[in-house]
Length: 436
Image 1 (tube, helix red, strand yellow):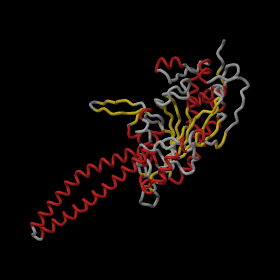
Image 2 (cartoon, one colour):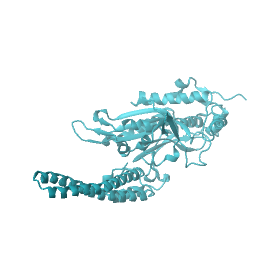
Image 3 (cartoon, rainbow, N blue to C red):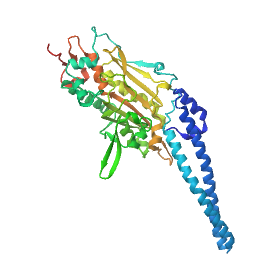
């Protein structure tokens, strides 16, 4: 959630920030500005009535002490009238306050000033590249075709069990997935200093509100009605481990010495992909259920930009260690995610498709999520508190990494070479081609 005080002070800058994002949220911003102005005007009226009520109540006591019964009666009648007037205004004030907050929840984060301006993903600059793309010397297959020929993937079985946009791994394919997950967690905990967590896959609505998925993206979420006795509660399947990991600091005041916090977790993730009809129907790129190893930082405000560079570097280390060609792009203002103030995307080369594909998105959310979660830091030796900054990134998407390995490490004889870094986890250097 954006700082309402900044919007009040400089509404013009707020409008420019939303215009830089493409402008479609301008009506939300204008509604917020109008509702907030009405709220503040009514608040002044209520505060004036409270002051008059308190003054009149004190005067009643003085009138009674002076045995001025007529004045005491008049003042008591005035107090009663003020209370009656306040009752309606207090109720209206509560309604306006709720409207301001609900509208503010629908407004995306303002871009950081360093973010390049642009109108679409076509304006995202490439900031650096990893290993160069090397021709394989033969025409490679896409990961779905190759994975099924090798007996690693079974799309028909997945469709029979769950319908479209689900995947099933068999035998060596399942073992390779397990090897990838273990490799990622060991790398991030052993070399990058993250604390590993194991988190619930179901969370309450306010937890998703804290990181920005609700109320805006409810159509992309899976939810269930959990009943225990006579009590029914709505729970949501997590779309990313960012949600539970970031909310661990919800409603907390964190000592400055405890920052930065670096957390990681492997989880299955669930998204309905409501707006992606017809896109990437085959393969592992856009599934309803997918796997990720997520990286989350909680930092002091002045350290979050440097933290984003470190976080992105940790995701890059995965692709470097596996010797996969990749590039890093910075998202322009119009392509930023809802909660992000600044984002780098890592795109891995998919030899079978002949194009780069996103495999990690690393974002600095500033204090946007912290305001929604009420997560604060107390500086050493100071009495006041301020909102923390939160960051998140995939370290990386497991299914997409599996796909990239299949597309870049397949051999002309139909076998698959296992990346050297994964061999100790997988237990073999190659998956042989099926016998004719």
